[in-house]
Length: 375
Ligand SMILES: [Zn+2]
Image (tube, rainbow, N blue to C red; front, side, top):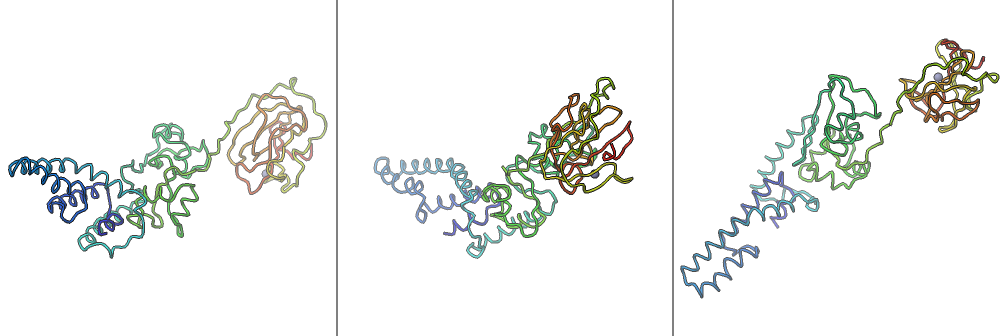
């Protein structure tokens, strides 16, 4: 019973567990199996010697005993390893209570616990055993999310999540620090009110995974608010795979189709902001995913991601007109492609800086922003 209690609480590391097992086994050996249920000791020190003693006499018996002792000592590391594995298994988690532990064990457990608590003061400590620690890397020139992920053998998602990055091609600022998680999973900072079960559910893992990796079953301070824990195998949010900006040189006037009339609205929606000196386009709100049509015949000249505007597409029309459509969720055409008035070129989204699904519809005439409703 005391043995079980020790396993449940005071197992700060495999080494300590193993050491304790050795001590325990050594004690058993000294008492010659009288008070232990260890079958091996029992057999080797009582039954076998008695039987062999009949054949070999007193000297032979001593030899047999010595041999048995030597064999036991040789076996100890294996016994220890088995026992340590059992100690580390999540089934030993149940109901820690220091009251059940004998006096000297309490002292030992508290000493170990103090060391662990001190460790958790570090902002990026993960006290997992036999795992790579959390590393911090200073970003150098030409480091990108994908070169770093490659270097540390991590997925883009794991590295991005550990650093609060949500976009694949987010620029890493030179000199800043990048946190390298210890493996595939989520590096997570415990928030007020979190429970292990909540966090496990959030990342779609078994709570036992969090318990065992972070040693929570041994030391509850490993799950304190502000503490960084690691959730191996966590389901992580997908990174926004941002489309590369692609563009072509403005097509010659001769290659552009003639205008068909006034510019058409890109989407049948509600105008939420008109063109004015502080707003270089017209905002039309529509449900997420609604198709965006080209305002007139023309040639697609640019697609891809821009700051603030998000994912956008631009179409060159005759007479020096160019229309652009910002904040789209997806673009369906490529630069160089001919499009006709009303042709589906993109869909309503929320990329870039926007408070709701809408298209920011822009017109430039010979490079100068104009009100698209006037053309
Ligand atoms: Zn706008």
